[in-house]
Structures are given as structure tokens and as C-alpha cells.
Length: 483
Picture 1 (cartoon, rainbow, N blue to C red):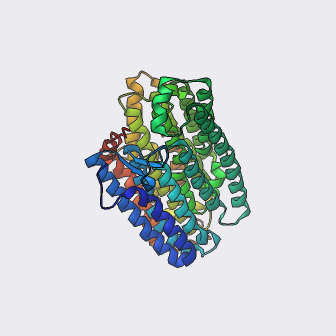
Picture 2: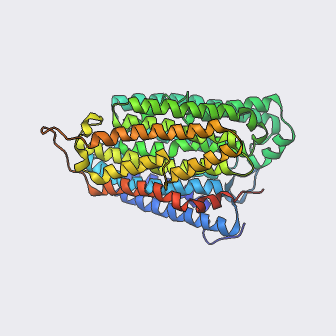
Picture 3: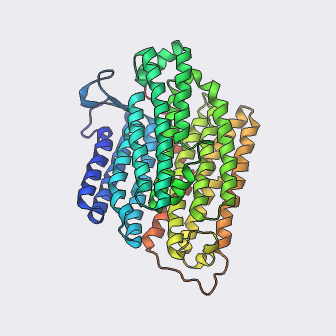
């Protein structure tokens, strides 16, 4: 790796830890400015890292100068950098939104804890995306999960605390299952380094490795809220404040999916075919069940939370379709990015709608189209991405997924993608139809800061423009780390 004046890799982990601690000391009012500045710096670091990959290839950083196995190595390749760019850009937008949102709703406990917890979550997320061994992946995933649980509970309401406890119990059980799998692998091969393990597992597999792979996959499926482990997600995402819901839905659930994909492409590649169809089947059921529940929901945030369950199903459809041509990998990554932008836009838009109407029900939306038209337009644009209509990033993702399925003669998966898009259209239009109805004369609307509307609109537009500029991300995906 070429020496640089600034190595972005360690700073992407150190910087959020630093401003998280500082925001705790400064308090929410002054801490918000510091957090936004820190996030702006992180986005610049991620862009710098992407530029380095395009010119020099994958990057490696040995922490403290100690190489593996004695030291900890951090690796940045195309897949990790795409996810890093998504993480920093979405969180920066949500931080700008959160500052105005908490000022509008009052500086309560949720506002006090939002900034430091978000910083710790981001440090864990960035470290997870850059980690190159199984145990560090466990540690960083735990940091992300614990920070996410605390964000859900920070409001202090009974429903929020209950949802956070369910989330915590599922997360701890899933983490324990994953860790047992790591211990089995270490017992067989004497290493947890992905680069070391990959050729060893390819050369020789044993019953212990099959058991370890199954346990680790089970834990990660629970953390990613894949059907039937999804039950904790709607209460947690639906009950949290809008900035927290957007952060969890857009980014946190992607962490476990990223690990499943990363391990499938490396350590467990020889075993992947055996479980690929099961992952695809669970993803298919998630699309149908999540969409059905969204169609039945009577509360806005619950509808959007069930939509997350459905849209996550698309991510797991790629596993039965993974092939050397890379189309399924491109589709899955594009779906993760498009969904992250669209779901952040949708939850922030819903936050504005709730503030404007004072209610979180679909029935309470009547007349809102004339009060916050920009926000409703943002919701509609994010819906376009979830439906997979051109020219959105969701369209590009679903087109690649359908192309991969048709090339392999798997027509059923292609049909499911189309059916899922139609179901998404049905629950999105439920909201839009209600918003254009006339409101009763007794209804009173509340004023909402324009900055909240513009953040939601900006995220929604980004999810659309991704479909026009997605090839740059696909180019990054071609950059792999070769130890």
C-alpha cells in the first residue's frame, strides 16, 4: 500500500469516537454542531478512500504497525467503501435533520443521547465495514447493536423501552450464536483472519465448519431482521423518534447483511451453495409478508417499518443468484444503497407529516398535501425507489436482479421481484391517496421547519439520481483485496 499524507482508514473509526465523547460533554445544543462537523469530515475521508481505491486498488492498514495474526488489520475494498460512503452521507443528512427535529419537539432525553450514541454507532459501523477477521467483526457488530438498542430506548417511553428490550434480547442471543461459530472455526483452524481462513476452508471442510457456518448465519439473520426473525423490527423502528428510525432502517440492519455477504464471498464460499436457496426463500417470504403487513398497517411509522422488512428481503434474493458475472452482487449492493437513501427519506418525511398533523395514523393525513407538499413529494419519490420504477436506484437494483435471474433461467425469482414492486406501489399509494383527501374543518395543522422538509426531499432525490449515476458504484465493486 502506498504511503499517504492522511490514511483515511483509522480516522474513519477514531473521528466518530472523538466527537461522540465530546458531544456528551458539551450537551445536545452545542454537541449537534460538533457532530455535524465531524460527519462532514468523515464523508470527506470516505471520498478520499474511494479515490485511493480507484487509483491504487484495495487498501490495507495494520493497526499499530503490527501485521496479522499478531496485530489487527483493517481492509478497504470496493464493497466496504461503497457501504462507507452510504453510511457517512446518510448519517450527515440525518444529523442535520435531527438538530431541527429535536429543537421542534423539545430537547428531551432522546435529544441528549442521540449525538453520543450516534457517534459510537458510527464508529462501530465503520470498523465493521473495515474489519478483516471474524472476532473483530463480532466486537464491532456488538457495538453497533448496543448503540442502536440504546437509541431506541433513549426516549424513555414505555413502548420504546419494551421494544428496546426485545431488540436487546434478540441481539444478545444472535451474538452468542455467532460467537460460538467463531470459536468452532478457531478451534479447527487456529485463526480468525478472513484472508488466512479462506484458502484453508477451500482446501478442507469438516462437520465443525458446517456447524459454525450455520450458527453464524443464524445469528446474522436474526440481527438483520430477516423473516422469521423480523418480529423485533416494527416496534423498534416504528416507536423510535424519526431520526432514530431513519438511522436504524437505512443503515443498522444493513450491517448484518453485509457480514453475510462478505463471509459468503470469502470464508464460506465452498459452503454457500448449500444454504443459498434457503436464504433466497426466506427473502421471498419477507417480501410478501412485509408488504402484506404494510398494506394492513393503520399507523404511518408502522407501515414504513413493515416496508423495511419487505425491502430487506430483496437483499437475500441475491444469494441463489450469485455467479462469476457479478450481476447479483451488483444488484444486492445497489439495493442496499438505494434502500438506505429511500428509507431515510421516507422516515424523515413521515416525521414531518406527524409533526404537521400531530397524529401518526393514515386517517390523520387528510389535507396534508396542501400543507407540506414538498414532504409529500419526497415520500412519493422514495416510494418510486422502493417500487423499482425508472430512473431510480431501486429500478437499477431490481433490473440487475431480474437480469441475473433470467440469465440463469430462474424465472420465479424474476417474477417475485416484479410482484414485490407492485405490492410496494399498493402501500405507498395508500399514503398518497389519503393525503389528497379533504381535511375536516376541525383539523388544525402545525408549522414545521423547512429544513426538515428539505432534508427529506434531498435524500429522496439522491435515491432517484442513484439510478443515473450508479455505474460509479459498480466500478468500485470490482476492486477486491488480494492478500
